[in-house]
Image (cartoon, rainbow, N blue to C red):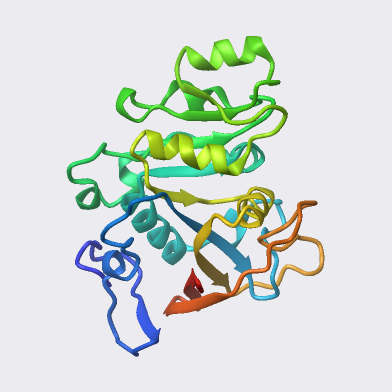
Length: 254
């Protein structure tokens, strides 16, 4: 695989646009060299029949060692990990740990990227707030109408940002991250959050893992919810393969 990988890491090969037996993931997933605005990248996983989660209701049911390796690269490259509160609860989000990212990719930045969580109720795992390092405190993107007591409690160990009145507005959330110098934004969903940001026209890139599982008709797709649709044309940047999983990188077509 990449020179960043240890000897036991999964091997990735490129299928498109140019077949290659070995892939440097950090290069394959590099952000644009110069950014003068936030760049929103989504990292999602889906089953071979399009389901966004597995039997337990969590996306981790579909994951693999190769998927976790790619996630480590993506988290290492980003400035901030953005997630919805529902996904944070279901998937058991905690602050990103150093062992979960490629350390060399963090040179000149904090050892780990902070997590930014979108929530109206502030119903969050206390560990997501309290266990974050001081230089990568969790950012809580919430609303003016959020419970005042919970806002005060969250502010003791995290950074609370008001990004809307009754709901978090995607544009305000992205602007708040940009004000903090966090331009390389990696969202890991879930499907409802991705729908909201896509509907607002903010998605620049989709990194999609297609997992070799069939889940049946129950799970939703990776974009779901009752928000106005925002049809978007994408352009395939690359297609990689590892351990029967496919790794597609799409960018928004102008």
